[in-house]
Image 1 (cartoon, rainbow, N blue to C red):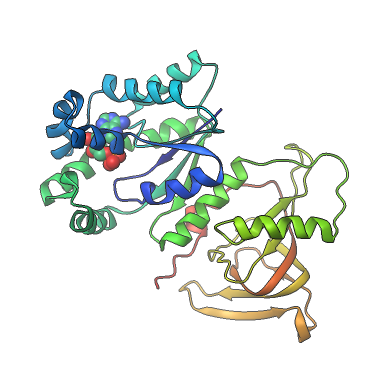
Image 2: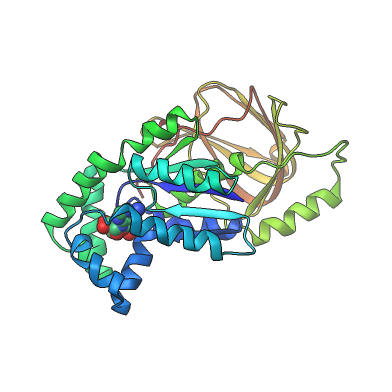
Length: 330
Ligand code: AMP
């Protein structure tokens, strides 16, 4: 079983992003906050007990949430793993989770975090209160408490998981699609499958990837050409459908070579302020079949018709850092 933690301050969009990630990687999304709200709505004894703490923006006792979590682990079948949202919330809960998983012969695989500033937390929680009517988003005072609880009790988890080399961070202030895109990139890297032996690159492979791309929320499918984790190059095929959106990003430690094998797409380069700098048409009558994108250059693609690319980069895969994703305010 895989155990992933989706981390971030209140209002970062964990709940919004979790369902797409859970569906793509066959994970059960476990939100302790949602489970507690269900208990309150159903008027159970547990719900009655936690109601006032939640309404005040504080934290429920470790015993209660950990019992709920263990019950979910025990009773869930048929998934590849779990996507924990809202748990652990303190280093104490993280240590308890390690112990719970150790008893099952398991461990936390990775923590992916969605980061936003306090100012954006305030804006988002106020908006959510108006839409969903959540008691814990309702007043300025509760919001202030939740932000304080996050910084004092939950934020130290970042160091806890950084020390274990399990912490990956996504930029959370872009639009929902851009954040999802960044998270998928992180999860793709964490969930790598390697090819066994020879791979023939032919139309049959392209068709297989094309049909997977049609079912994929990102309207594209990649195919990692490496054979093992020890392979520290980056070589991959991608099949892109029109409408597929790639977040504007850069690679500070690597040049990137993109070769177009089929179809038509533009590679677009951006300035630091998010304005378009240059655009290269590839395929069709352009006569261009590839681009070498220089280290540090902001870029993205726009897909005109079904396209197949090969991409090569230097060095081993590493997640794109938050500061290497450009938020373009739309
Ligand atoms: P959330 O939906 O994750 O923002 O959670 C809403 C509220 O539920 C929090 O403000 C806490 O009061 C409570 N809660 C959720 N998860 C936990 C947890 N792991 N430990 C303690 N309290 C929690």
